[in-house]
Amino acid sequence: MPDFSLYSNEISIEEKIALAKYLWEKHGKDLASDSEIDRLLGLYKKEISKSYELMERFGVVTECAMCAAEVPGGGCCGAGIEDWYDEFVLLLNLLLERKIPTERLGEKDCLFLGPIGCQLFARHHFCINYLCSRINDLLNPAELSDLRAQSGKELFLCWQLEQILRTRLNN
Image 1 (cartoon, helix red, strand yellow):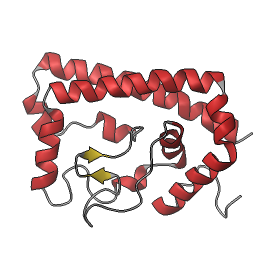
Image 2 (cartoon, helix red, strand yellow):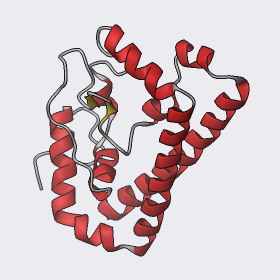
Image 3 (cartoon, helix red, strand yellow):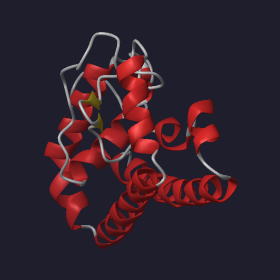
């Protein structure tokens, strides 16, 4: 095992990415073939897709892209946000067959921010849940409620998967 341990909040994002890749290489096939994980990953993918569909329909994607272009550091997608991620959310991306970015778009941007938004599929709870005042002003109460409810579904499945991964990989 590499020279770091699970639940490591004090390591760099590069080390967390390396740890996620190590866990994928060592346990990925077993995790991917686990029927409970496979079932939850299928549900999780659907809920993430529904979240993105709502954000697109309600204009959130466009508004976030404009903000990222206008605000130095990408608005709420600024440098340092990537440090909040842990190896388990990063491992979820690998289980979902997504690459983990290792090169920053701009020096003041989150490592995971790409030209058209976040390059990760499984995201940190802040990135799913946070809506700035611009977005809150953009959405009517029904849209805001729909988006929050959908985000909750996505977050719950992410939490379930993280708990399973933590249990299986720490035993």
